[in-house]
Amino acid sequence: MRIAVLGTGKIGGGLGERFREAGHDVVLGSRDAATGVPYAEAVQEAEVTVLALPWRVAEETVATLGGLAGQVVVDTMNPYANHPGQLALPELYGTSGLERLQELLPAARLVKCWNHVYAHTIRTSPDFGGLAATALICGDDEAARSTVAELARQIGFDPVDVGDATGARYLEPLAGLMIRMAIPLGGGFELAFRLLRQTA
Ligand SMILES: NC(=O)c1ccc[n+]([C@@H]2O[C@H](COP(=O)([O-])OP(=O)(O)OC[C@H]3O[C@@H](n4cnc5c(N)ncnc54)[C@H](OP(=O)(O)O)[C@@H]3O)[C@@H](O)[C@H]2O)c1
Image (cartoon, rainbow, N blue to C red; front, top):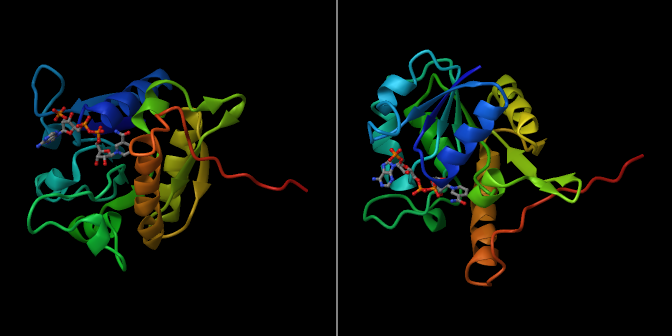
């Protein structure tokens, strides 16, 4: 599958590497010509586009991508904005960053995934003693959610579908909890969320 990853930082760089290892044709989109091709070029012909940018540039960047009609667009981002005039997480109850992006890209098939997973887990391993870290997934297009679930499975995560785009209203604050545990509480990045299931 042809996958464009926009932003080659901690999350984008890590996912790009993992998808490549899984056999996908990965095109890195970057502001830096030494690292990748321009974002608008990277998304051409892609079946899946991954947005791994700081939220503060997300809205202006997606406006330059030509609409991404029909593409599965994975939003890994968390709306922690500290720029005046931008929505930030505390203002988003009742909506979410994912829903905002879906409004901006109405013909694209937006899916939230990996926003609550540390880049460290993606770059090292999602395997915790034989248990795979959970990747919670939501978005309005069921087939797009399945595509992303399959990608998550291919790179070692346990995908869990949490329904339509309104699920992002819960997934985005969950990322805040993960950051709180890692940094202010000093838990570090050797942690991941895992959903347990009772088996019959
Ligand atoms: N780090 C984590 O553990 C983690 C976990 C879950 C979700 N997230 C979310 O994932 C997104 C990316 O986070 P990250 O940790 O990967 O950040 P990062 O390491 O800073 O990477 C962000 C990338 O975005 C691109 N970019 C475009 N415009 C930029 C600008 N004005 N300033 C800085 N970078 C710009 C850059 O790639 P190019 O130079 O290649 O264009 C940069 O490397 C964020 O929305 C974050 O909330 C992060």
